[in-house]
Amino acid sequence: MNATPTPATTRGEQAKNTLINAAIAQFGEYGLHATTRDIAALAGQNIAAITYYFGSKEELYMACAQWIADFITHNFRPHVESARAILDQPQADKAQIRELIHTACEHMILLLTADDTLNLSKFISREQLSPTPAYQLIHEQVIAPMHTHLTSLVGRYTGSHADDTATILHTHALLGQVLAFRLGRETILLRAGWTTFDAGNVKQISEVVRSHIDFILQGLSAQQRESEHEK
Image: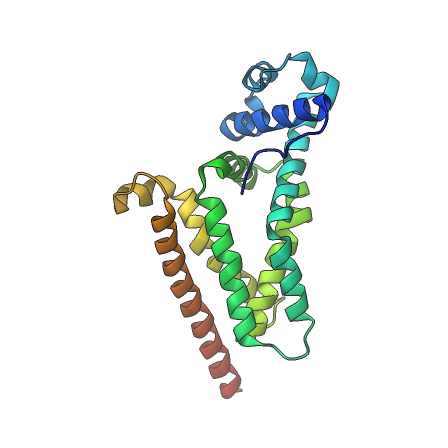
């Protein structure tokens, strides 16, 4: 796993990737108040390179959003493809669904406890709280499809309708089990007495989240059965 741009084959591609990497860090910290001068300095590039490669600071911001969307797509493509295959089956294989939800969330935990994805999280968090057209790009390309697939899996497992608001909310709450370890990073490090998320700590987090997901899936399934029985 590496949250920096992939090795470039030309000097121009290398310069663009270096600028995007620096820009994600600066935009994540300061939003659009980040200056092109600071971005160029962090990238070790001339400030004119931003205009040359991207046109403007706003276009560089959108290029960062596209890079993040591509990064997420690349990392979760196998999980999305597996979800589509399962959902295309006429009968739900609950064991397969449960395992896919677990593996997707465990992979998300690995990404969200890694230091080299922190700037990506800062960028997306800013967009969640104060959305710009960049969030719409990320949402349409990756967040909405992934959220929809996960909601469909939860719905198929529990017997609820995937387009019901309640199912969407429950799925979002399930994702919160994972996101809490990024957005509440300092809290859990201090409360657990950890200095960082090492392999052992991440394994412990994954085991806790796995058990919580099972509680949610089992509880929703039981609730759905009870609802159908009352009908």
